[in-house]
Image (cartoon, rainbow, N blue to C red; front, side, top):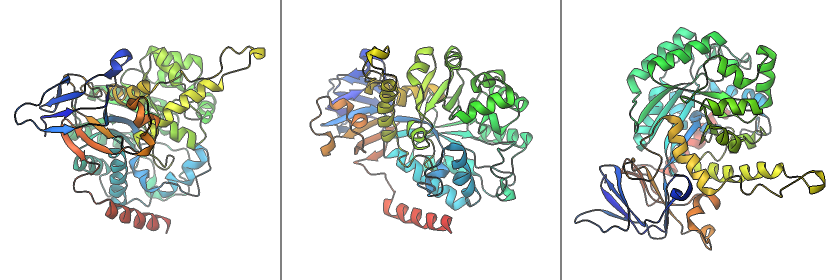
Amino acid sequence: MNNFLIKNAAAIVTGLQGEAARHAGPDIRVVNGRIAALGRLEALPGERVADAAGCVVYPAWVNTHHHLFQSLLKGDAAGIDLPLTPWLAATPYRFRAAFDEHLFRLAARIGLVELLRSGCTTVADHNYLYWPGMPFDGSAILFEEAERLGMRFVLCRGGATQTRQLEADLPACLRPETLDGYLADMERITQRWHDPAPDAMRRVVMAPTTPLYSMAPAELRTVAAEARRLGIRLHSHLSETVEYQNAAHGKHGTTPVRFAAEQDWLGSDVWFAHLVKLDDEEIALLGATGTGVAHCPQSNGRLGSGIAPIRQLEAAGAAISIGVDGAASNEAADMISETHAAWLMQRARGGQDARPVHRGGTFEGGADAATIDDVVRWGTRGGAQVLGLDGLGTLEVGMAADIAVYSLDDPRYFGLHDVAIAPVASGGRPALRLLTVAGKPVVEHDTIPNLDLRELAADARSAVARLLR
C-alpha cells in the first residue's frame, strides 16, 4: 500500500508553522511511500482509497526520549511519591538486575505498542541497561522489536564509566563500563545499524546516561569527538532538577549547561532530555548553539521536577521536541497523553507568572503560551529535526508518508468547533483509522497486525509478578 489516496479528511494538521500549519485538503495522495499531492484529488484508476471522512490527519508523532525497559515498572509503590534522585534508587536501579532477555524484550514490545497506538511511528530510546559481560544484546532486541512493528527506531546508547553510588547495594553485574568498552560497542552498533539517510528506519546516537554523573569531563570530550567522527548525534539528560545545579556548582563551579559547553556537548547535533531548571544565560547558550530539547512534561510533573521553559528556549533558538520519558516515571507513556500535557503545562507555566496589578502585574493568564499547532509541530517536525531525520515529520509534498488518521467517533470529540485540535486538546486515545510508515500501514482500523493484546497483557501481568518476587 505504498501508493494510495486518503480521501475526505475533516481536517489536516501539517506540522508546519503559521498559516501552513493547516491544509484544506481534504485529500492526500501517497506514491512510492512519499506524499505526492494534497488538495481536492480524484482517485486514479486502480488506486487504493482510504476513507478519512470524519477523521483528522496528523503527521505521525516522533518521540525523542524514552526508556523502553521501564515499561514493566509502572506505578512502583516504592517510588511513586519520590523526586528524581531517591526515585532512581527506589525503582529503576532496584529492578535493573532482574531484567533478563525475556523481560527486556517484553518491556520493549509493550512500550512500542503503547506508542504505536497513539500514532507514534518514530522512537528514540535512551537505553542505559548495559553492563560488562551482559548475557544478551539489548541493542539488537530493540531494533528487532521496532522492525517487527514497522517503526522507525533511534537507539540512544546509554552507559556510564562511573556511578552516583546509588548502585552500591546492587549486584556486581551492574558495575560501570570502561570507556574503551563503551566506545568499542558504539563502533559496533553504529556499523551494524546506523543509516544516515534523512528518512532512515534505523539510527544510532552516542548517549552517556548523564554528563554530570556518568563520565569524567575528559571522557565526555572523548565521546563527543568520537560521535562526530562516526557521524552520529549526541544525547543525554540534563538539568532535570535542582540537584543538577547543585552538582554542577559543587563539582565544577559552573552551571550544568556551561559545563556541557566546556565538554563540547552543545550544538545542532546534540539534544538533552528535560532542561527544566535553567537560568537566562543557559537558555541563551542553548539557543545560540541550536541545541535541542526533548520536553517530557508528564515525567517532569510526576516526579515534581517542574515545567521546562519551552517557549523561552524556542525564542532563543533551541530546537524543541517532545519525549515521553520512561514509563517508570510516566504511567501514560504515549504521545497523545504527552502532547496534551505539553499544551496544558506551558499555559500553566505562563499563568504562574501572573500577578495582580497592585503588584506590578500586566496580564491575567498564560493561555497564549502554546497553541495546538505549536504542540503538533514540536511533536512531529521538531522531533524529526532534533533526530536529523529531515525527510519526515510534516505533511507536505516530497516528505515520507508517516501519516496518522484519527477517528473522532468517541463522545469526547463531540461538539468541537475546530475538529483539527481534537487529538491533542481532548486527551484520551483517539482510535486510529490508519497509521502508515513510508506509506506502509502499521495500524488499520485501530488494529496492529499479528498482535494479540490479550496475550501481551497476560505476559505483562506475569512479568510484573515475577519482578515483585
